[in-house]
Image (tube, rainbow, N blue to C red):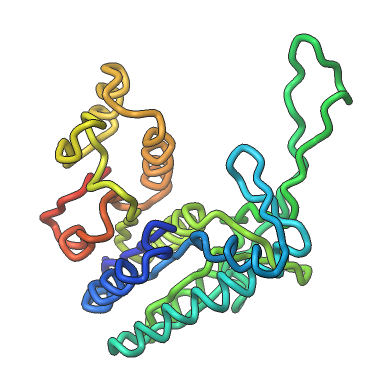
Length: 276
């Protein structure tokens, strides 16, 4: 099967112009079919402050009200995405900037109200449900696979902003990690997919205090062992769980590593942590 790379970058790259430029230069040189998914970083918050739109978070997640969905659509789908596209075009990488609404590529459903669990001392109805607003949960079964394959077969490099749609005219703010995983799983029947998550460390660390203690390979057996030995910090466990979920659903392998190591991590001689 032909290889496809699905690469996700987050705010630590988006918010640093020098880091983003370096990453895009490296990304443009990769001679393989590839998809880039980017987060939003802090730019939407900064512009929102300038426009008088306050950012609200619940449990670390942005609440996307009517004003905020307009803001993130402008910033993520416009400013951030198109700056990335313009830079890639200058590097002779024929990139196409997209959201999930384009060509019906990534439909989603609006996240339902979240009802807090009953605990001792409160009764049903005392704590109101949490409404995250216009946040989308991807409908993986409805992914526009045929249109994605048409674009990839015509040698476009696809660059996705973290936005989807509900098929009723509403744009939805959607987690970029989830979009990347959904694309990787959906295209795994056609391609040998490596899903790459670029984050702030060199890989999964055996000792969180030692930046060089990267675990080069994690299998399910190795993962069980690491968890039993309490060698993984809490924040990385959900990422590894998501990686194995992608693998269980057809993705060949998942790589967690530093954006600076992208070129090496696209080869068979990886620097980060390969999960398979």
